[in-house]
Image (tube, rainbow, N blue to C red; front, side):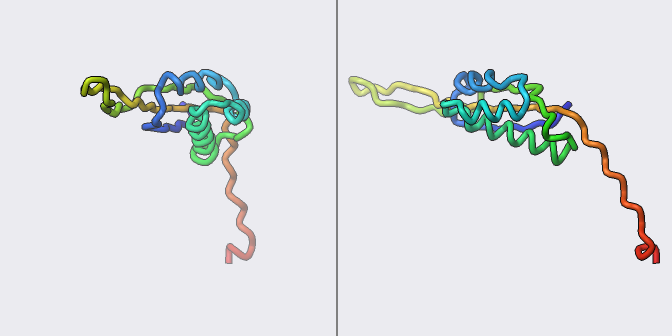
Length: 126
């Protein structure tokens, strides 16, 4: 499994976020970031942040080459809902919910070759 990044509790409804996530599903990270930079939706920001975080995790923690990263999986699930009330006619109150989302991004690519230890010089041996 590749490098994972999660963005929990994003205060945008899961349906709106999943529409943006569908635009970049299965693409390379560079293409996805370009698409998300020019997507005029509020949900593009958190998805872009999650993709950037997954790419950084892949490069630094899992030794993947940055130019070869592909989005293997991007999923949006429903987060906790905040229950709120709005005034209605005749003194009543209507209940509504503020929805939130969890975004999970998994990226994979080519592994970088591990660095070989440097040969010890004459001065270090002494």
